[in-house]
Image (cartoon, rainbow, N blue to C red; front, side, top):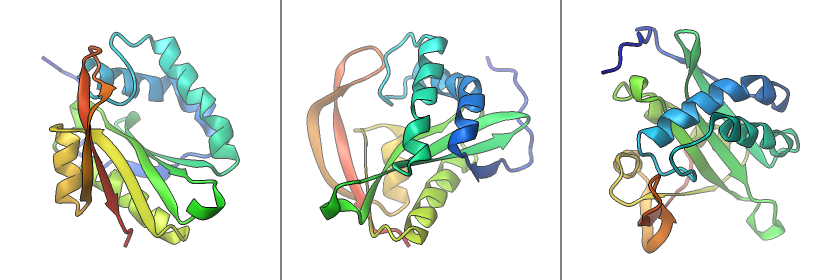
Length: 181
């Protein structure tokens, strides 16, 4: 049973500049670790080494610095409770689109609308950056899939055995798209 207290104040969502990504890597690694330990299929297998998770976040800094990616974090109760990314397409024929990636909410903070707020932030910021098409993928049947459907995303299709879950079992993935508002 979890006993950590999450403040009742709404977490504050801010864009994380590349210079701050390394400093936040340990907290982001803890968030990533919690998600993987909770069974979220977000690219990593359990058990996830905290040093590997921190190194992954630190490795994202060059992409954020040169504008290929943007990262937002939600802070509350003195820690990072959630994050979302936009990954921009750099090819000349795809500069109108971006991928929503690594939408993560700490298990202690779920069920309070934070995932929806992070997703809305990414959508709004994408529209402000001139992005006219967003895409994402998620494990078929996951709670994330239900979130995307309820947030107005359109299913493009399902690919069988696309990615391994946290235990290494191949699972189907559903692809979605949306025009940001």
